[in-house]
Length: 217
Image 1 (cartoon, helix red, strand yellow):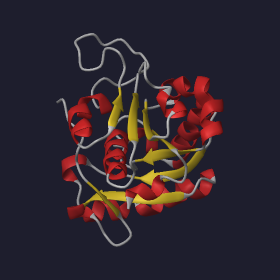
Image 2 (tube, one colour):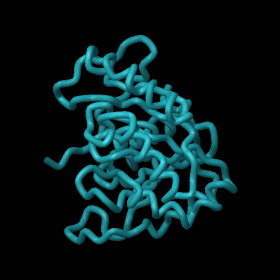
Image 3 (cartoon, helix red, strand yellow):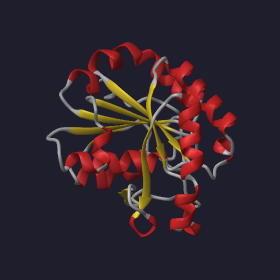
Image 4 (cartoon, one colour):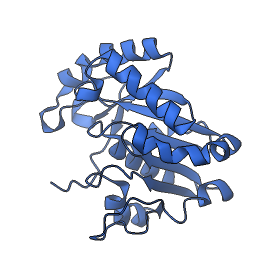
């Protein structure tokens, strides 16, 4: 189950645009709400205005997830900002999922909270998609992973292989990326902890997720 990602109270999801990180974050929050009494998800994606946790807020709230949004989320004012209620993840007993912007620029917002994450316990996961340019080879992926760690002041706990080609994805596409994901994990020293896929594309060993992210195009 995807809730196996909760080794500590806080989970941070990072990854480049197009890797499917927001869909992973939303799936995790929804699954956690079925298991834990108090779950919140924070939208810290200040980089990409098109695929954000904020766009799934209504469904998340309906399913008992507390959604921590930037001040101007879901308005026609697109000013990058942090959710005013974001510190709640450190001061309450909620199990939290934080959806972070796609590169070191997006991850930099975490640096000011690094000590607080350390104090409550966290796991930060890198969402990998072998079919995105930023993950096109191991060298690119390693640079991205290390840059996010340097910018955030936090360390990755694991890699989530969410390789897909959007609507063109089938089981062979998901399976073909396994070797590349494992190579990246071996080179980085960060373990490959999960391979995710929609049910129709899953093979034994995959964690099944839903396509729950609202798309704006």
